[in-house]
Image 1 (cartoon, rainbow, N blue to C red):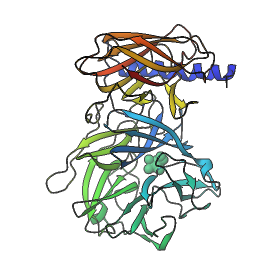
Image 2: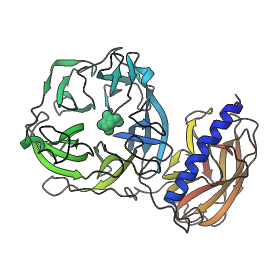
Image 3: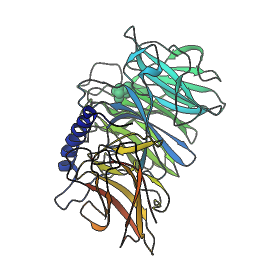
Image 4: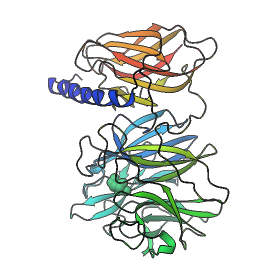
Length: 462
Ligand code: FUB
């Protein structure tokens, strides 16, 4: 399948603007990339909901459309990582059309595995204008997810579900804004047992409202995230508004009673929401949130970020600062097995799209765009060549292979010729010299054409 002139123009516009925006913001004069947070740079992302499965973190997110002036959200996205630094893009795993009864607002959800299936609880706006919680189900963590009910699971005009299965096997769904609710889920995970319970929002349980925030009884605002650690239940939530900060409460059971424990993270930069999630992975604890830290970022163009933290010895959570460095990498990444091009620690200018060969590919690549892959273990002998899977309906370009930064040591250059269409793929190979040890690898893309140079499916060193 080829690409129309209109698509070509759209590729140009979409590829060119972000390149300009990103370039100035994240590069210093020496060309050194500064940041690995936010963890997704190919689009604006929000409402993180991570899940550990088979030694990988699966990070479900919402998606703020470029240039949004409201919570203009139409689909949910998935990313995964084994090392907390390089994130593989799995694309759109569910959208508003999944729920025939929904009109808009693909807002903050959470996935939980049970019975060999994955259940995805999300708030959406119904066609009658009221918010409701839907549940979708999939046989695979990466989808496709389908509406489990054909109607809302709960419809009380409140949002932001979080889900957890207690030690006795009883699953609970919490949600709410402006109130806080919970309900028991039946074993099937797609029906409620009994009636939802409204949690009493007391200052002892949820703290007093910050002065200047909108008028409510306690600090609780939205985005609850529930989990258990060392016999203590934690309810972390976005507090106050607006701007929000992130606070938490603890309790002796999944239904409380809750005791207010304080602030975890102050208002995070340019975004007035910040939506928390907490995860233990590989022996460490991680705090996910969103901010407005990408160029063009703000309250409706947010980005998911993550910080590593340690609980205090008494189980309390320390105050966590936002960083641009993000969490340290776990282990290294092998260059000698096929790596998806959409596995990215940081990038500039480019986008991703569904690949005609399956999975995702890096797309909208323009002159000077780049991908950073962190902690690539070339070993003592080093790499001798690079193979890259590419396609181009245009005249192609070059892949500069650099170490340490976009202007770091050039260890090889692969030339990409036109392949005749965006779905005609070719594997190009070029010699590599001097790639040894463990390095941050940069693919810097160059080309003279003003259109998208090429798309990039995967790479592997030999
Ligand atoms: O992303 C839309 C809404 O903004 C979410 O549902 C809230 O948690 C806030 O992040």
